[in-house]
Amino acid sequence: MRKVDRRFLLLIGILYMTKNIDYQNAANVKVIQVDTPDNILTELGMTTDQYNWVQSIYFIAYIVFEVPSNLLLKKITPHVWQSRIIVSWGIVLACHAAVQSKESYYALRFLLGMMEAGLFPGLAAQLCSWYRSDEMGKPIMWMFGFQNCAGVVGSLIAYGVSYMNGLQGLSGWRWVYLLKGIATVLLGIATFFLLPDYPKSPRSSKWLTPREQDYLEARLSENAPLTHEGAFSKKEIMASLSDPRTYAFMFNQLLVNLAGYGLQWYLPTVTYELGFAALPRNQLLNIPPAAASVIAIIIAGNLLTRAYVTRPAFTQPIMAGMVVMFILFFTIDSRGGIYAACVLGTMFYSVYFIPFWAWRSSSLTGMTGTAFTLAFQSCVGQVGGVIGPQLFREQFAKDGYKTSFGICAAAVIVGWGFNLWTWWLTRNIEWDVRRIRRLRMKSEKDGEVFGEDDVQVFDERNFYSGLQKKTDEKI
Image (cartoon, rainbow, N blue to C red):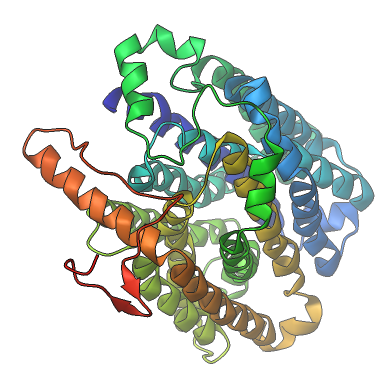
């Protein structure tokens, strides 16, 4: 497993960080040389409301192409398909530097969403073939930890490149897109050679012995996608569509994303309008929210592996913190208080998806079922990315976007309701996952490999009588 960690963790972290830097650049470049002739809004003749569509259009394309992209993952193989995704979006991103009108900018944002579609659900589906559900917290922590480094790295890039404004006749925002696009293309080429496929794929035999390949699949739980499974199964897709857990997870994700994407999209503007720092140093105010998120993700990931509580129970204080922070946005006027809410709100939103995606993995089944369910849930969940930026329209600016944040708070509260429903639907499997995780940890401490029992997904054990946990004697 240490071999597997070395092959995956750093690479998937860098890939997911790059994806988030590249799509979040639109929020950062908006405030580069703001209120000057070289600002992107001025050069393209856009209002702030029109600019909000830059992010919404990206997510519309992402939603449309997410499922088809993920269903091709097994047939084309992950290393080929993911490198195609990365190289193509890098080319599109570099082309952003050449836009001359808002219409061409919109078109490129749609293409960017189309090309990026499938990266995250594809990686998540692939990881289910390598890691058990009770271990998924580790790779998810690496992905989301690096994702939130995107806020730090993206802000530093925007800050540094802003000083290139006018070089070779290009505005600072054009340099951001051009340089990041070129770097992403190079990363995509490297991914073709570095990303593994599945435990028993031909590429894996170059760094794993046959016994290690057998072990990696034998240790997985009964619902895990395996190397030999076919690339498409209609039965698994229909099973996913008829499973209420699919929709419970989906709407929980959608509503939390609506608030979180809204905050992330407007964070650079909020920090600029607070007036704590002048241009271009205002970009540096975006670093503390991202840094706090990374620290919280590392702590949460480590706590999650210890299985003190089930994953849904772990999410409850995080949901509560999110609700409080979004309520603060529209109930206080203090500049310092609003900035603190930005830091903590971003942190709670970011850390939420560590237990969430590990939790989601426990009830996925089969190669097609896993790929389809993750893509279907993720694409509908990204509707929040379409709506979120539209909440921050110019008409809400007069009172500091209190109405916008009020809607975000309401979305999180309703999302919390879906979170509780999802917990109810998965209560038995999640307790089983915790039980097996603790038994495996005990065996590891004793220098042994636990193999006496495993999580039952298809015919799940019944650990609860109503809301009451049964005693061991009754199970």
